[in-house]
Amino acid sequence: MQSVTKPYRPISWPMKGAGGDTGSWRIHRPIVDYRICSKCQFCWVFCPEAVIDRKEITIDYRYCKGCGVCAKECPTGAISMVKEE
Ligand code: SF4
Ligand code: SF4
Image 1: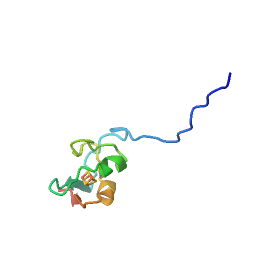
Image 2: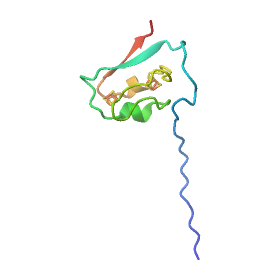
Image 3: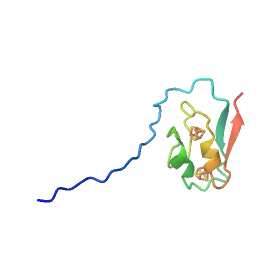
Image 4: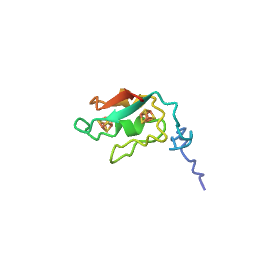
């Protein structure tokens, strides 16, 4: 009988909260303008912390690190990085 080899998938998935609470050190936070957002989910795909809700496109600021990847990848410019107060 021929053995079946599973395909090798060198993919790792981010896990929300794996890096712990962000605390107070974040300098900028992403703000979504829902008037512009097309719900394309690019930000959800690229967020390295997996803190963006796929359907609602809401951001869990407890774990968001403020890296700005979501704003960089957003094709409509709906995400702005705003300085923390
Ligand atoms: S990448 Fe931009 S347009 Fe797409 S869902 Fe996220 S915020 Fe909305
Ligand atoms: S700033 Fe970084 S961690 Fe926060 S939602 Fe955007 S991509 Fe995710």
